[in-house]
Picture 1: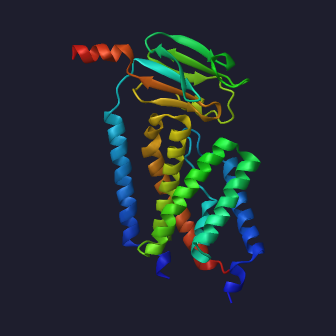
Picture 2: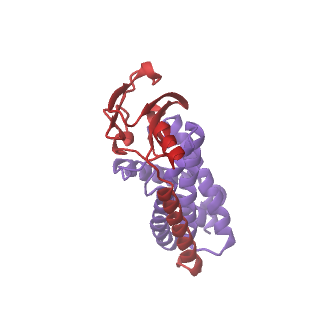
Picture 3: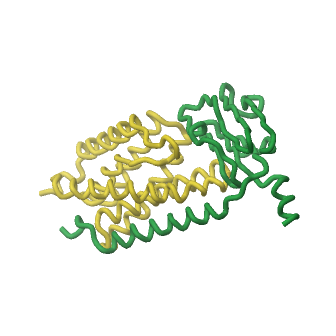
Length: 164
Length: 130
């Protein structure tokens, strides 16, 4: 019965819209006052939720569409490059972590958070051609862990309670 | 389901990541060294090097290679460099505060501007003397 809805365009539309709204809400309350790149990543709740409820391919699709649309609406080519690098690396880590079955939602989300920040730093290092940006790594590693824990715990609740 | 609960592996993963962050912080800390000068790069191109010992105020604009209308004012005072008066949207470069250790940077992503502290001449002399 559940299968019926997992490929519905309407459901994908709702999930993408939700992810975009969460991205937008977060941009209204900037946490990155001192260190660039430090943020909670509320929209990733949707990514983790879809990863568990529907599947890896759908999680990739929904996250990619969200990143592209948010960049078109509010960002520029640079912010798109950073987001895309973070997104690709975090999904590349989260999908096998989930498949391994050794970690809970929180563990998967934490690894995704750290991978996302690492991806952004790599993109910044390549685009700006400066190695010194690596000095942000310890801060972004910790912020990735903390954000990952928050997103993981929230997502775990949603995965358990929300039926699609 | 078991996927929902925090497991031992998760705690282990979080612990390991925090230890790695701590080590990175530690290495970044011991590697710190007061710099002798700052280099200014715009869009990956190094445009000038300024000594940290002199007090200077320089307004970076399109004549230095920034895009038209972009502006950042770099101050060097008492051995520290900082930016004021930037017209970038996020003001991350202003909020970064002052830098003085080798390898520290002020990055203004919207303006593709990187200010980096380097050893410069002063530290080279110390190296020879030491």
